[in-house]
Image 1: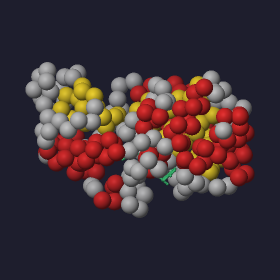
Image 2 (image 1 turned 90 degrees about the horizontal axis):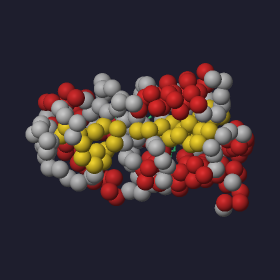
Image 3 (image 1 turned 120 degrees about the vertical axis):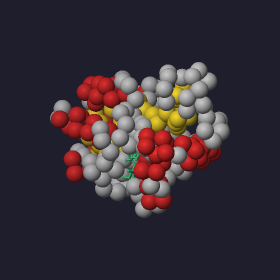
Length: 247
Ligand code: OAD
């Protein structure tokens, strides 16, 4: 871990009242969930066109649900890590910490972050393809579950390729990026839009953008500070400098 970069990040954060934190799959990696585009990532083993599009679901809902059932089962086994907890703790230290996540695993909320904006939906929620009916939880709903209101298919309430973001989520994310003092971007390759463009909103306001990622990303070239290490250790290291009395 580069101590000078950690110091720079701490300096920017110490001067800030309000943070906007954009997270991606790398944030969950240290809880044991595979990322999408790393060497052993999810999309190296599975074809998104067969599992994560509305067309795939229309073609073969049982197969799509099979895959989501596995992902949901995995979620029952894992826990948020110290990095998630540091971000949640910072809500008591900063005036505001708005987490905007591309992750569908709910780990930020489980760690105690409030009002998390879930840009790509939530794995632990299913919704009707036709009406407003939704059901929360990770229970196995069976191979081809149906809506209790109208009898149409239920689907995982996540965003698939080619779909819009959940209503209101993008507006809320823009609001967070437009009202923060510092941006923090953690564990995302920065290739999926519109999520990645939130960093441009922050930079266009002349604000510092701190990246935490062991590898370079699409965002690295524009980041004010890049810390090349895993998010758990980096967040804990920054936290120790920012709030020495809390450790
Ligand atoms: P990616 O898999 O594209 O990128 C994960 C990033 O996490 C990479 O840049 C890694 O270098 C980094 N990383 C790995 N381990 C890390 C660690 N311990 N600490 C910090 N960073 C680490 O995942 P996303 O950018 O989140 O969308 O992908 C965006 C979207 O693409 C996902 O939300 C999903 C996917 O298709 C949908 O399903 C709609």
